[in-house]
Length: 73
Image (tube, rainbow, N blue to C red):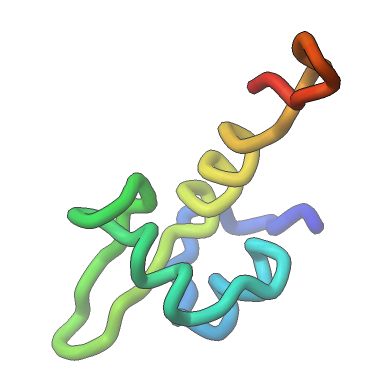
């Protein structure tokens, strides 16, 4: 899914969908400062930049097979 507005901020439900339907608990565990996904806090709301979500997903892509059939990053 290509988003035409990479700087757009999205709320948790949309961020979860952009990452393939992950759970809210998993997303929270991966949100800075606990994890690598940056967020913006607007009052009580946690928002994610679409570009940051795409960057995280790209960084997790497996590109080759390692020894013993294990996937390597």
